[in-house]
Length: 311
Image (cartoon, rainbow, N blue to C red):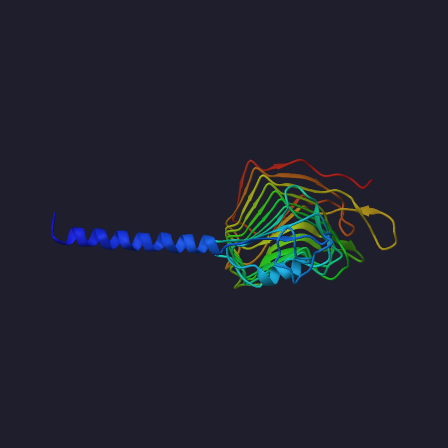
């Protein structure tokens, strides 16, 4: 043993102790809050406790810091999730329903907006009758878990949900997306687009879509225009479901669409998915379960179970 080893060991131990103390301090700083719009004492000037909860999700957006969790109690809320801060790898920001209570965000402009935000988790919430389900831009390491998105409110956005503009390492798990699309002279709209079909510089990548259900979209259910994403154990079906503007004739269309430029798309993995019924679109004579306009797709045990005719 040389004379330097004890000094190195003590120095290393001191550094480790300092790191542990920092971790304890960070954990101590993390807080839990409650939003309960139905509570008679609810107010956004409250401290956000169970006895004196916040009234709005908007207050949580302003207040949450890395490591914090807000529990949202049963009710329907008209504001949306858009935290002002990001979480960190060691301390995520979390929005979650309280126990198994039914929490719905409805009749709002958006459901979830994460622009330049990272390490945010949204779990156990329902979203309906919105102008936009969800948008992730320049967002990374976010997780949307056990959420339900259903029914567009007005024809304002092509995609109900987007993960794009260089968003990476995000997860959608055990979620449901449905009823986004419309028909005029053509089928329009989709449930989810990942990447930008018209960009040669888009660097959206490494996102995981797992255990989700996608059904009842317009032009398609899910569009993939980026690279190195994983789709695992999802269920896609787009039966004839939507009337045209004249109030007649039910239409459906493709489930999946993969496209994009060589510079920023391809090398996506589809594993264990079920690609089921695809209805007849208004403008063509044959349904498309999967429109694959981009090579570089890897499929493993992905089952296609056919199409269905109108009616």
